Image (cartoon, rainbow over all chains, first blue to last red; front, side):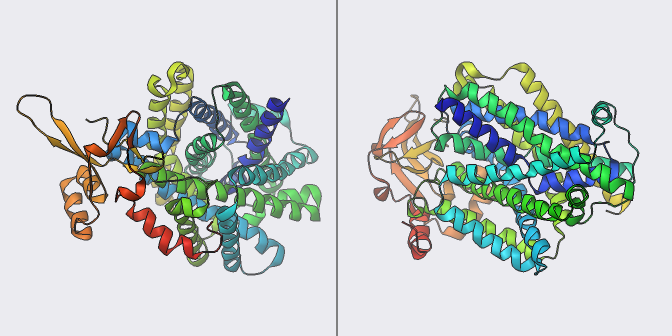
Length: 408
Length: 111
């Protein structure tokens, strides 16, 4: 019984934790500009992240150290530095975007300055992480994130043509209000938003904090497939809703609040509240995970003490890193005047660009019997992940110059 | 020898200290080289990244952060290297100690 409960909790956590500012912004842009034409990117991204999450859970269940530790011990500092440095930069940008998303929700509800709210969000983030426990933070914010499923309900309310949408996953109709450059740009950003490498570092640290054993392997598989699968439905719904409400009106989701218009269409004034709640909860939750992932990454690769369960004085550097990043990210988001939507696009495309650098070493570990013993990867999983990662990289590297030429 | 570099160093209580940045090796005639000491700190680490990086870091720290752990301190070598002294006796916890004393302990709720 206890096992079923913990699997159920894992699934709910995965579903609620799926959506974040990256998913909201990229899905909103995709739907408003290209209708159902970019659903395939969301589906591919989901398949890839399901494989990756299952892998990182299996790595932890086989009693291994966290990924960043293994990265240095297996590859040495010289080769571990590149994936790590790329991750630190990507996470910094993404953290800023998430803080922006969370702050924007309060700006929406109160009209009070967005910049001020970024400071409030940063403070709340730091307080929660300073003394909170790992499970409470991860489970609490993710379960609340189930509110993102309001987009799924909206998709039903608005009468989504399900069979047409399903058809376009395989045969996208690339008719829309954007250029081909923009199409591939958004495709890259969707892939970068969904396939978030920080999850590798976060989950491997989490399975260590929670003391996973071999017995968790099957539960982990179920949680990865069902949890991430259903979580993606929330993100897909954002595309569907934006496609049906924004695209016909020619409204492009360039501003964050326009993504919420779909909910307003379905629910009236409640749509505003639901959107603000979804925005705040999912972005804040993701921010906690990214901030912790940053602390884990640095302390694990350097061999220093770490642990969210430890008292701060017993893991001093660990408890210094995430506040420093929170401050830095908040300064970037709050002071630079960058639009949160723009920053999210940059963060997600940058992520898509560095995916091979971070994921290929991970796959190498997953195929190493020294770490996974008899549970190394199936060739199909390797192939699927590699193909999707390479695709994401190719799309992002070609779309960046295209975008620059087209004028942004 | 290559395996020991970048391995995790644990103190006598099993607490993480740092990772091995380098080794000090003695060549004895035509027998295999013998590890005399483990090196930790930013300087040996930087040297492994390249001679220019090494010189740059050494100029910044003045070599004060490099710590030499004689092989006699090593209790056991496995996936991790276990030492026979507590971390406070290694001299290799400067960063952690400094952050704890000057920053963390000054904030309420640090435990």
